[in-house]
Length: 354
Length: 181
Image (tube, rainbow over all chains, first blue to last red; front, side, top):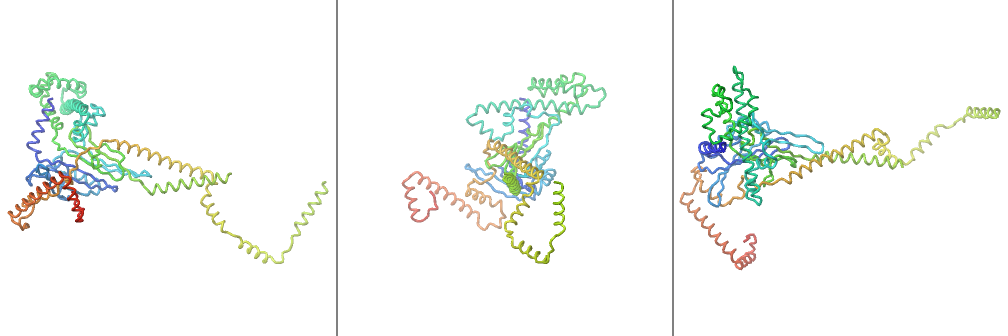
């Protein structure tokens, strides 16, 4: 697929030039009942040079000198050394985390991220909800759930380790077929997003221009047609765009010549939004009390786990949330005594009546 | 008949008007107080407290309100617990990801120490090291050698059950049961 080849080239370039020192990062939020959060970042790197290892600008989440930092190393059976940096900080509330996100100078600084915490009193229990959210990148994109069924969605959001396990497990054939289906459908999803976003951006750039008959609605009504054209010509997409053939098919000859520069600008914006330079990492959340709801996965340490990848927040915000509860023992006792008291009164009344 | 009734009324009026004269009303008062004092109140206090606590059972609307409140509390409790249990049950059926934690808890402690020693020159200021590089090399080599020999010995013992039994027996005799082969 063309998209895959473009993505592959971009990824390779990023790997070769920009992201070769990116550590494998796991962020763990230990949420406390009072709203404070102990945040722990664990980074693993194979980079031997101490000056290149764990550079702030290459770390996926905010980290600065105010954190308690511990360095160590691990040696595997082959003798390869892995350097591990553990950083920990207590945030008094989510406001402090959000402030850290705003002033982040790490590798994912261009992405809007924030956290939220709510505590609700429910008489017998107090419920807590914590979330980490990354805002969507595309303005005119389609949610991935429009393209995948529930099983495929679950697979799409699964951590790589789980996918590997399933693909190599007893139902390997089923999961390989599922993997192929997800890949095929997400390719379609990306193509549709590409076209939809281009239409949106192009319409914004041409809006209000004199004699413009190419409106957002007219382009949107032909969206599926554009997607089919792209699918049909995926192998010569670059050359067809450069020669203006594709644009002529989209807008007609006269408009293609008239709005060539706007169309190119729109495509540049879309490409920048679609193929973002985001460094993946894993997010973990440990909630106070008993866990009662989440959209994450449970890892071997019984802590919630989410993989964080750019595809997840392409067309819709990616929210990693967890809910838990702590029983209010005093409310249980008071309620029990009250019910017993009323019950005794009612029994006395019945006995005296007799 | 009418005459008889008239006579009865007259007698009654006469009796009402001729009330007995009390010579010692104070004595009577004292006697009454004395008798009241002698009454046993032990059961009455409890009864009063009981009446105070459960007096509401005789007031219809209070009784009904309290019963409604208790039923509401019980229903609320049942509803909340049912929802929570259903959610917990759903979570317990979720797949557990065997994602390894990014921690070094399983790392070989000795190997880790060796790496720290190997990199000591880079990690600590040179003036804090009081042994020479040659000595350090010798130390590392001897530790490596010792590790290899220990592994060989361990394999040898594991492969020979009789030898293993004998060594375990010897260790027991020497009261060194902490070493588990």
